[in-house]
Length: 104
Image (cartoon, rainbow, N blue to C red):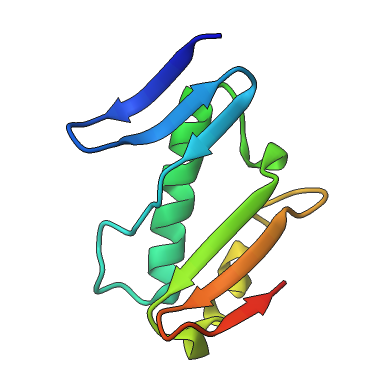
């Protein structure tokens, strides 16, 4: 089975395709000074881009891990994500830098 590397760099690839499975690397916002809504929009755009390059889309995501530097800002992201994923939602886990975790 072949392996396709998307946006391969010296250290890592942004996405790797093996068979019918796409693995995305940890993605961050290009503008770290943006608020949670702005950073979420930037990251979702990257996810769309790499999944499209892999020949798929967000409707097939099975699991997502979301890391926040401040878990108290967690609720700002979901308002922006509303309407992004159609149909069933993936398993998701939000992580705070202080180790706090919430399952959604």
